[in-house]
Image 1 (cartoon, rainbow, N blue to C red):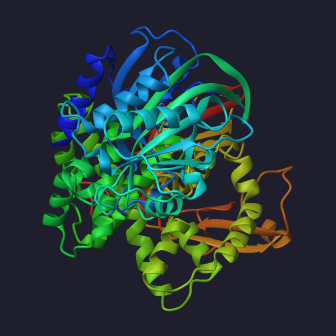
Image 2: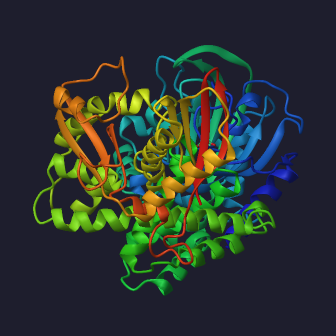
Length: 620
Ligand code: SER
């Protein structure tokens, strides 16, 4: 059965039973803090419905059904095994204070086993029930409902599995059979359905231990979860019983597809198979796990960008960045360099009719270019870092070297660790952290004071460029306006630099032009950027710019631009990071049509506060 068939059968089955079909909500959760936003993305079908599960009236009624897009990254390291993905679809039927346990369970059973539904063999079905704890008692009501349904359908139920008997119904603790999305919100006991998809047990009854072992090794697979929302939690404690209990069910589409398509992993289902085939076609060095990571991460990225997320260094944008960059790394391992776009395109086509925003007029090209641009940015980081890494990787990587990779090449620690693993060498992570801490102390002034509001991301090649450009701008302002200029603040993102400095009047066009010309000249001169660390009194003697009245430690890091510190064009007390050479500000080599062509440009010059001017500038 094709996945689109599973999806539409599910919606139709519940529509026929009085449920209104609702559209999937965006992957991006509402921005309000608290219970409506326990996570950055919808990680379960119930999340967009939390307010309604707590009692708010839903405009479309009390019985709803949907297929909700979800992104879950807590298991990102497991992606590539048989069942984990960061993007998945959750089918769910919802009772908002309407029907409860009896109907929910009956319909789950019917949908799974009837011809109108999926037609699965009920003898291969096993179910779990909440065993009870201090919050709620053992759910014998649910166990009895299951017992009756099985018996009515002539399916053997067996004895009491808590007493060691063989059976079909198993009691498990809250860890397994209690659902909540974080410490706040609706919650309650649940009942889960497992399917012996490979028919390993031939429909026989199992002991509690047999079942638990089978679940652990995924011989039987959880296909559906019926949650009985009866309570509300606040800060991890139950604060009330809900006046109108609700039902939240969740059936993972990928897993259902796996079950119905007779394959032992989600990547062989039609939901991911075409992407996997495409990757295989494009790969020179086929490697299954990497291929799965590429397929999953690119798919998740397409959906996230469609829902408005863009790569950045915080929150949602950071998750997206990580997904794209991991996909790029693994695509390189596969030797499919430069071909990610084809996978993007395929996923867009595949989902265009189900989730239209992945390929509509507004998003089709936008999604492709966001991914391409991020890939491109990452490649610059990679190219520099990989070269350096290869030099270092003849032995275990010391904390000092891991830190050098990070600070000078923007190489994230996790990448160093991953690459080292591949070569069976070790990274001294503890020593890295010590270095990192030392560096932070060293650069406290350089960063904290100067970058009020933050230096966006020390690892982003564009941010590093703008950081060096800021030093050039600072000196150029001194050249043009004189030494009355003093730095008041700086804020850098991957898109621009912003520099605040003391100066009383608006700059003339001519002054601005002069500043731009100087900076561009320094870029064209391809000056080296160097770092030295020296004792404070020595450092002060170099005449490097620093903040008066600021407390510095004993060891000072200075960055200077030029061949030696005495004749350097610019020198500042600063923790970095910076580019190695000002030529890098002219754009990366190897980017068609861009190599060395970027120019420094002042976009805006305006008053920031009394006696302080603010410049925004870009490299374009
Ligand atoms: N919230 C439950 C789950 O995600 C059921 O939808 O498993």
